[in-house]
Amino acid sequence: MLTKLILFAGFAGATVFLGGVLANLFNHHVKDSPVKYETIHTLMSFGAGIILSALALVLIPKGMEELDVLPMAISFAVGALLFMLIDVKLSKSGGQTATLLAMMMDFVPESIALGAVFAIEPSMATLLAIFIGLQNLPEAFNSFRDLVQSGFTTGKTLLIFFFLSFFGIIGALIGHYFLSDYPNITAHLMTFASGGILYLLIQDIIPESKLENNYLTSLGASLGFLVGIIGEKLI
Image 1: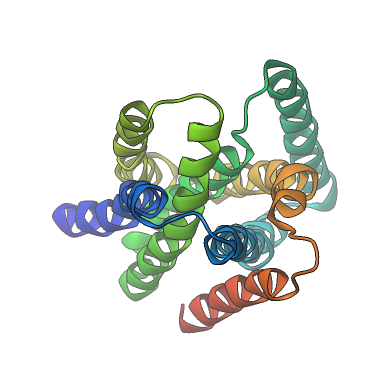
Image 2: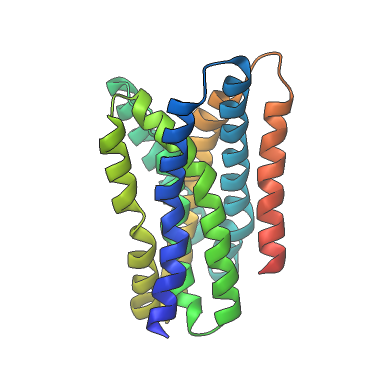
């Protein structure tokens, strides 16, 4: 059973590295053109839609299910405030890591949830692993671009993504062995992440994905959210 959990979590995390590899290939082997620019912004918007679906369909509902109003509100507010402070600090240094932060803030809590539910509902854990993997692919694609624009080399960025891909296994094992009997802690973690993710989406990711005089790019967000709806319905 442990091997199966590691395989599921490994798949969910592997798409982080795969998204970085695909972004690198796209940047170097597709010529600059309006179509390339529109594709990049559409993928950013698509990723924002998927992140929003994780927030609305997985993270917040889990917090609402397990927590009372005041603890839930405090966790959410602390997440939003903390990531506002992080964003202010990063903006002063010229970094562009909002998409990476948002990706990790839904990837890690969901991986922990994957481990926590694996022993109880294996079928749900299987679909959750697929859902997490599908989320990570466009998010990693966009995060790779942001990090490279921030001054990271291609090699260093891919190395970061390679190590981040193992966070899924680490999170799943933590959830399985330490948090499966403590749903309140998992709920607090998810609600905290929700506050930070929502802040990052509105402040950085959604404005960056907008392209003037182009309306199809914004449709990407709706399609990304639809992927989340389908995934949640299957789960």
